[in-house]
Image (cartoon, rainbow, N blue to C red; front, side, top):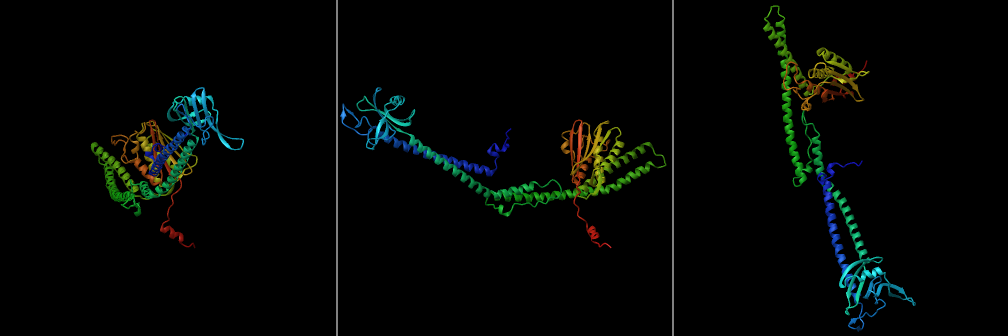
Length: 512
């Protein structure tokens, strides 16, 4: 099956600028060469035919002898006149049965001298020549077995005899063909040379534009949506000359990059302030929330009986304090991860981690069907065990919360040569299509109502994404009705760590 070219190559509008310039230059040169060649060919043809017509006129009246009955008879009747062109045709037709002449040929007489004579022609050729109009107009005909001829037919002065003279067009056609081939070859060679030279010149001329495009490409590959961005890419000064079009583009790109860099710095400063505020606020709220929970619990444990309504109110206060504590802890964790706080780098057995997490999930949701799919050998990664346990706990809580009772939830662990793969699959109703692109965003919820019954804060999956990303891994989701799979991929190769000053000092101590 033939391969289809990309759609952009089907139309010149999708070609690169370099290719379009070269194509237009070659097309223009080809058109000019064709015009010049055609003009030269037409002029040469006219000149050759004019010369041929002059020779026809001379052959029509080769010489005159004495007049008989008012008719100028040629001096030679049975042989061509002196100087007649070999291969030419001369006929005197008095009637279809009285035809004199023929095609001029060359022969050698008894004394070794070359001379002309008429050679007989075929009846078909004679019939074609006799059928020509005798109005004296010069026309081109083709005689079977003889080739192309330029012919003229006219009535002599006696009014009874038709004089037919024809000259071969072979040399004329050969000359026109040779000139056309030479002109076409010259145009082709010129176009090829001009195309190669144009490619070199255009490539060198567009090098500044390539450097500007390379700068824009490097900028486009930067992550500008989060974190601190050092936008140091700029177009070189030699490509910012305002006197040239490319220089104007380069200068405009540099100005735009300056504005973007300033905006990114302002955005990063604002994000830093917000993260710091969230971290400080979350840290400060932990103490009063712990106090509220402690006093509420202490009040309920008092030996003095308290009214039922007061006990209910204190229970609600404790419940909401717990919920707010979870929210504050999640916000504090996200703020620390956003700030780039380092995580622990310890060996973590994912197999045991999954067993423990699924046991906890079974205790929290006993009416779900929890399944395990574990490898025979343990899968060990390097990371923060507590945070990875939180990732798995959040995924299991998400499956328990958004699937009905009795749903099967399967947790599997696998490993390749480079990464560990953790999957949490459920047979629930699936994730709505409009929510999937935002599933890992903060405060994203599967339902429009912010139900407190499930205790969801909308931060569980965002914490999963943040923790996995901090471990240099990736998390993805594939969902359809009846099948939803969250896949976590973690590298098996531990990150390269730089030893601290204390470690270097300890290593440098002499051993006694």
